[in-house]
Image (cartoon, rainbow, N blue to C red; front, side):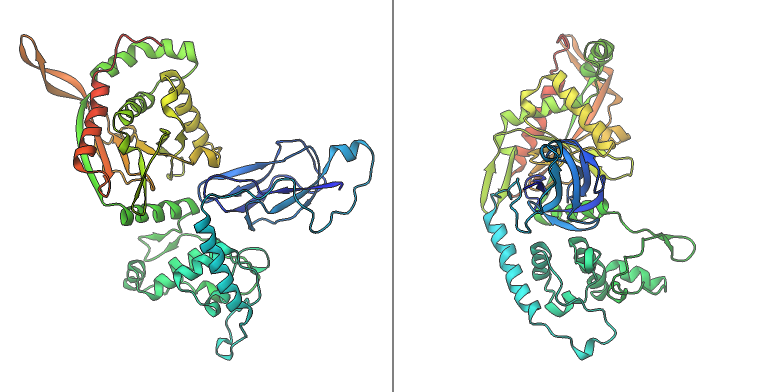
Length: 465
């Protein structure tokens, strides 16, 4: 065949589909291997998809806004081999097999559940007929539903007739995951008398028209701030904020959170960093912050207490052999993202510094990949960056613990010496450790945070770069 089908590549563990944001190339453009040709969004990150070979982009098989399963064809490329030989490309058979195969996913039970839901709802939808009592309501019977959308509908108890009345923002009114999630959170939430609706009623402001009354084929209007009474506004959450909100609520529902706190003397580290940071910059080209030093102490403590580096699946505790440290990064938009340093125990301080700086920079430039966010086993948050001295962080599921490092503050403290106790000025910092009480008891949670503190206080100030 003269044309090669390019498929949606695997984006990371548990990611089954992507939403096309925009095409970066158009049909007829010459492309090179690894050139970015479109931008897609997953539940975890926005990323660019590179071309699998050099040639000419002949056809885009999906459109902006489409939700595309992993492994599905997205474009056709005329390869350089045919172009250089001057051969005219043959017609591509409609069922031509793509070069890349659909990846195998380890979670067969999850796939079976999705497919079972898809089969059940698709069978019901195919038998649906237009009802007279739905006159004046948009109906979309007969359109395609992805297995993910059907599974969400099943879990939320949305019947076939209700599902067909939900307008979609995808091609040909296709219902995307965002459409059905918005319908569940907004339309159904309003009918259940949610707190947000109560607030609106108290302000005596009529709710906006339901999404299901939007004319067929017209895109959803762009959310704009609305004034309630001249003194406040309603601002629609962006996609990332909705995702953060949902995951934080889910984490609190899943894990009984317990927190322990330790105050740590950081004086030795502060003095060592002040002495070494200029030489460190000259020798490595990197700025030395406190974050890699804190991660180094976390890694050592995890080796001492491996049962903190686990996840829970039903009644089973999964002990992770890899130590993958996630670090919370605040974005310019005000949102939060958690890139992961994989195999953090295999880096020295210079290596950790390079990884921290690289991930932080790419996070703020929106250049992280799905792999950069996957498979974290323990997370840290440096809340001291914002001047906070203490906090109670929320666990990032399916992990079982997270630690927040507060601001380093000068305080008077008792200093023990062979000649007796003295009062002196020390650089102190609070460590806040939140952990899942299903599997981490106070003994383990408390010992772990104390061990991190011990490694920081016993930092070798004579160490070289």
